[in-house]
Length: 170
Image: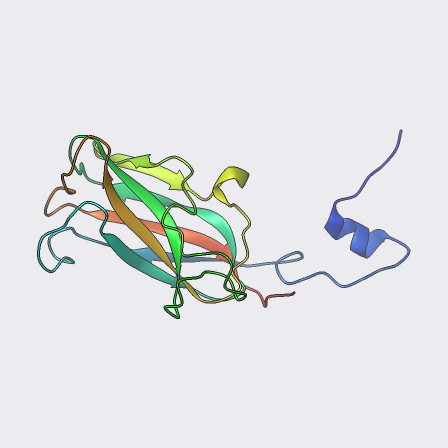
């Protein structure tokens, strides 16, 4: 029976040993949390398609997923969780080829019609393990699948994102 190794174990067990990149050996998972209230944190009227910058995630962070907890936002309401470059360039990568993406971590919009909780960025299809090449904001974008309404007023939308910090290796 053959034995095979992950890319990381091949680096340390193989005949041509090489160092592990940050985040591949012993690591500490960091969390950033946010609290948001649709009345207290909004100036003016909340509209469909508005986005909130939730937390700043540092360059080199490797995403481990996150969780949202929310009150009922109204009939047919959804949320997209994404990334926006903190430098205002409109891109989330250093080369300027990957545009800000409002649904980077949610391949399917998250249903926030009724109070509850959900996860994001925790599957390969939702960019689990993505490593940031520069500082980025985690964002949530409001959406209404049934019309042009906005999220309900005076409701809480809280959560956290987990990531491993490390330097970016090109």
